[in-house]
Length: 85
Image (cartoon, rainbow, N blue to C red):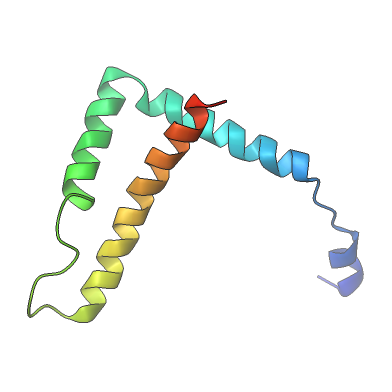
């Protein structure tokens, strides 16, 4: 890709916002069902409601575990945003 091609790219903030809102709504629809709620709670219990690292483990494990936690927290944040739309 050239600089001219990069300069030609224009992002409309409304398009970005609409895409985010659409993904938030989709996440809420998927996890808004009874089964979806059960799955989200299981994921939360498995990845969020546990210690990030145990004494004596390699420190890099904490980075990995925090990444897993962030994915689940991101899903929860999307659902909360969608409820406000």
